[in-house]
Length: 372
Image: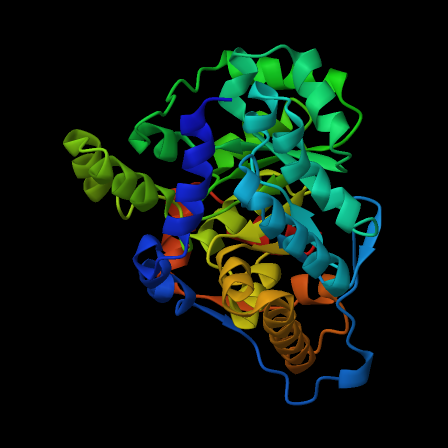
């Protein structure tokens, strides 16, 4: 692994914690066009509301994935260990940052930054992570060997064309042959593959294309949370790459907002598992996205901030508030479990309905299938 790759991992963490590196304000109007329906007589007891969710053959305490963030630099080992301990204590799933660093450099120092996750968390699903573009650079057997060595339960293959376009070291070659390469990789590994974006959302077309090669889990990572376009734009400015920095400004609002991406994916792949991530940083946004058809929600930046500001206890405090808020919203919609919340009525305003029609989404068919 090159020293530039290692340094980039640390630089990404530093920049991801800066408030200006988010889309958050871009999505307020989207969420204001969606409303859960209050039930004055819920028909359930709050004590009976359960968040437990089955995912990757584990029973989670809540439908939450702590998204992959770090790995590959010695400085990230401690962060990953804390994330693993936090996820284990909370009973939620955990992703690991991209394993490209380990594929490039199998040193014990790099290996430890990933393996420490499974060592610290034996009772939760752990999700590996690679970028789809590396499928054209390394053998399937080498990728499979690396993934097996860190003992993960699933592999997230991330799609990040907007990030790669702006990243000074980026590879923006997302050719059609990568679909067949991913299909071939599925034959080499014995764990499920998750197709995920990194912050600009999945469309119907993308979900359908990957479903055709057998992918059954999708993480939308919509344009409502951390903006990797802005992060790479900041890195480009530091590197005095003025063209990429200017392009990042042009594309600063690019992407599919998270709730819209959930609708697109749920409609395109009605029987698949959909994870709503990308700015889903409050229990209300989590409830909205589940009511729109998501099975789980993914969180990254607030967890990382909590760890930096107060360690594992601060992270647990954030998750406790998040889960209690989600339980309250489920209770107030008359939902005793996550599946019932998915099946509850949800108001969708004219702006989103107009978007759905323009995309050829059969609204009645979507509403009938969003609950699984």
